[in-house]
Amino acid sequence: MILLRHGQSEFNLHFSATRRDPGIPDPKLTPLGHQQAEEAAEALAGRDIRRIVVSPYTRALQTALPAARRLGLPLTVTPTVRERYAFVCDVGTAVSELRLSFPDLDFPALDEIWWPAVEEPADQVEARAALFRAEMAALDDWQHTLVVSHWGFILALTGQSVMNGQMIELDPTAPGPDRIVWRA
Image (tube, rainbow, N blue to C red; front, side, top):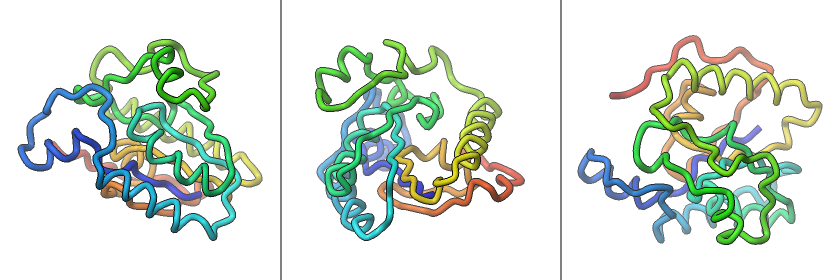
């Protein structure tokens, strides 16, 4: 299974410069983020991907779309692989608005408001990641899955911190991380 962190978002651009939450709900990709998404699609073109699972945040959807087009695959949008809710950027977009912004996508598994109302404790994100790992491990074809997600969810799933646009591979049948180190 391949995990892809979304490309650089407006939040990432400002937060990396100031280390302060810039207060941007559900930010879009920056031009660099779009470039990272296109580069990821190019890198994935030769891979035997048969399923793309993606978070409902705009930055993840924008990152997944070039790969979906290139591979000729639909997106499976699920809040299971969403970011840990901790900053303003983790306030999502209502499903009715997502349908307007992404009219070619299907959002069948989402409630109108699909993100939490309060900060999500680390142990809850880790439990969500462990459940997703188990669900993927139960599939016969998990090796052919691309998951477009976020720093916090990928950290909870693998124990690794990944950069915007970075891909890593994960065998969900292997044991999960012994310890997760969340940065302050």
